[in-house]
Length: 458
Image (cartoon, rainbow, N blue to C red):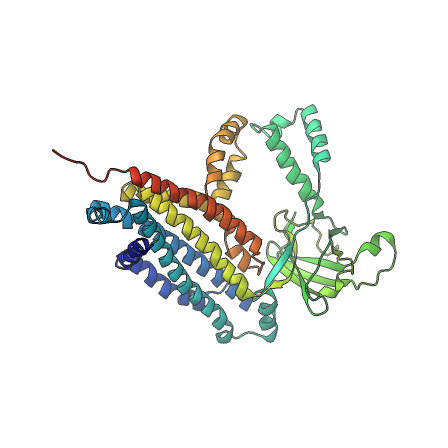
């Protein structure tokens, strides 16, 4: 272990002497405070905080990811190209100890820099409300909607398989499949029909009421806590002022079906909100029934003169406090650290058999594909049947080996103050670090142990 740590400390010194590392560090030291002072968002205090968190965390993650790749690759390839490695491997140090030392040095550097810059981001977040003029209402809003960690309840998708099959058979009978869905496989056509019908179920015509029901809603302190209904409108015809009215009813709405009076209060709130923008309604947690039942109802009043829709992915969710902002922020940092550990292993593995420019290109391709893996997976879903079959048996299996950086982006949790659960942390640690990153590290140990570093010339 002493030899591994000696290589690690030497790797850290080597990285700190690199000009690119100095440039990245100075950029973050300068840009993070500047971004905090210039972030505007939607003009509100909450919007400014959300904007800074989004850009600050993303910039920190991006630059540290690039720095990790560069340092991990350069620390090995430079020793080989400058022939310094000959003086190392001739000493009583094995090749696997050299690789482990390089990896450990990069990870220790990542931990130190990540702690530093996340500390700066956190300091700016805490100080921003003190230097920005905001009303008491806005100050209270950020405490309940930003400086917290809220569990999320999403309405379950409605099973529309029977309706999809009936519509598919009707389109097939009327010979409209070729016209409406050319070059689409039957499975993809049914997938599109499913989304269409499910969206219709989440559409409220004029005067119609939509109801979403939730079971086993258990906040920690219903007497003092609040619930938040987070929603986003879409419309069939956009109003001139891009605002729609809504009559919300939240609580135990089972009495509307049965006519039986319920003891739990029902919160009613008429509102006027912009379309295609997230908004939240705060209600007391006392509206939850004793058996954990909660219903959220929306009535589309005649004032709108348009159909109001709630998108399937993020149209509506119920949030309630489950943890503190600081604990959630620490878990967000762990998600970034897991990404850096994977990239360190990837860089070490690439440097074990490739030259510096080729290894950089290889790692950047993997990094970009991992950052946009969701886009690639969704794009292949709309290919023709023959291409889709080829994708299923080839590229799809390769995509599963890539890390899903976009699925574990911490900003998508911090911006809406959504809880990052320890279960998610464990899942990412198991898949990204213990399986994928460990596999790359083992491959680098095997490859480098058999690599010919110098040829004997007679």
